[in-house]
Image 1 (tube, protein in one colour):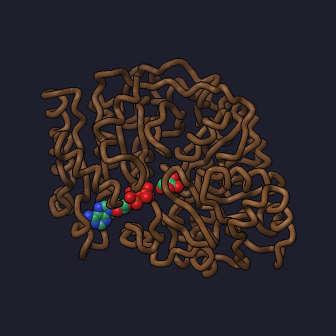
Image 2 (cartoon, rainbow, N blue to C red):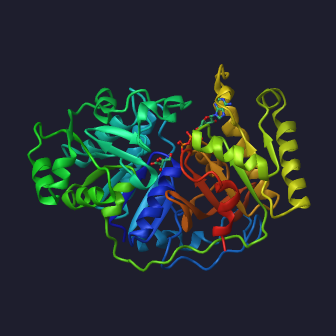
Image 3 (cartoon, rainbow, N blue to C red):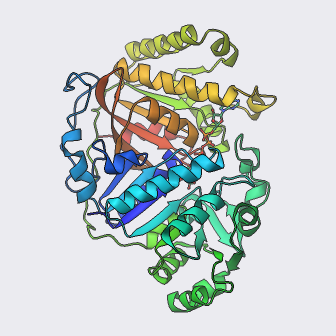
Length: 455
Ligand SMILES: Nc1ncnc2c1ncn2[C@@H]1O[C@H](COP(=O)(O)OP(=O)(O)OP(=O)(O)O)[C@@H](O)[C@H]1O
Ligand SMILES: O=C(O)[C@@H](O)C(=O)CO
C-alpha cells in the first residue's frame, strides 16, 4: 500500500518526481488525474512488479470497449506501490480549478492509504501573483489540519539553487534567466519569499544555508521554533547534501512542498527496484512534438532542425483550416517514416522568441490542440515512441492519448525519462513510450539522442 502521495502541478513535473522516487527505492505509480488513484482505471507500477514488456499498439489486444488489458491489474498497481504521483494540469489553471483538482488528488491519495504528501511544483517556481503554488499549498495544509510547511524549489542537478531565499538557474538569478520570457508564467522576481507572499494567506519566512549546514537537528529546531508557527518556510539549498539535510529534518511533516530535488533525501523500501520495461522496440516509428518556447528547447529545436526532418506549426493555416493542416502534418510524418524510420520527424511551435511577440490570444491553445491531435493521429498511424517538449504541451498530449498510467522506464537526463504510457485513443487501447521533457531540461542533443536510451 502506498504511504507517500504526491501531487504534481504538471505532467513533466510528475515524471520528473517519479523518476527521482524510483531512483530512491519507491515503487511508483503516476496516475493521470485523481480518478486514476481510486478508480478502476489507474496506474502501472514502475519497477518491481511491473508487467511484462507490452508490445501492443493501437487496436491490438483491446476489447470492444477499447479498455486496455492493463486495467485488470491497475487497482492492484496502486495498492502495491510505495508512492503514487498524481499528475495534474493545474500550474496555469484558474486558481479555483487548481485548488479543487489538488484537493481531489489529496482525497484520492488518502483513500489509497497515503500518509505523507508532497506537493511538486516547478524548480523555477512557475507561478503568477495569484498562484497557483500559494493557494494550493494553503488548501492542502487546511485539508490536512496542518499549520505550516517547507518550500524547496532547489534542484542542483538541473542547475536550480536557492540562497538567502533567492532562486538561481545555472547561476543566474531567476528573473535574469530565460524564465523572464516564459509565455504563461514570466518570472520577473527571483526571491521565492517575495514571489510566494502575494499568493498565500500564510506568512513566509526564509531559513538560510548556515542553518541547513548546521545539520538536520539544528534545522528541525529552527523549523519547530518558527515564529509565527503557521509560516511557509523557504529553505535554502545549494547542493544535494543540503537537500538530504532538509529531508532528514522534515520527516515529521505530513506535507512538504518543492521540486523533485527534495525527494533526493527520501529512502523508499525497494532500493533495488527495476525500471519499467519499454513498450516500443528499436526501429519503431517515433516523433518529437515541441510546444515549448523555453531557451533549452529552442536550442534543442535548432539542433534537431539540422539533423531531423522537421515542420514548424503554421498558426495561420491551423486557425483557418485546422483539419487539413493537421492532416498535412500527419502525412509529413508518415512520409518521413517511409523514407527513414530511424529519423523521427520534429514538429515544433517555436524556434525564436520573436514567434511569441504579438501572439494572438488563442495561439497557446492552438499549439497545444494541434500537437495533442498530432500525437493521437501519429499513434493511430503506428508511432511507438514520442518525445514531447513542454509541460503544458505534455499535459495536452497525454490527455489526448487517453493516457491513464505512466510507468517510469529508462532515464534520459536529470528530470527526463522514458515512460510507458497506457491509454486509448480513437476507441482503441495502445501502449507507447513517451518522454515528457520539461522546457528547460535536457542537453542540446536530446531530440536526436534520447532514442538510444530505449532498448
Ligand atoms: N507561437 C506561440 N504563441 C503563443 N504561445 C505559444 C506559441 N508556441 C507555443 N506556445 C505555448 O507556450 C506554452 C509553452 O508551455 P509548455 O509548458 O508547453 O512549455 P515550457 O513552459 O517550455 O515547459 P515547462 O512548463 O516544462 O517549463 C504552451 O502553452 C504553448 O502552447
Ligand atoms: O521542476 C521542474 O523544473 C520540472 O519538473 C517541471 O516542473 C516541469 O514543468
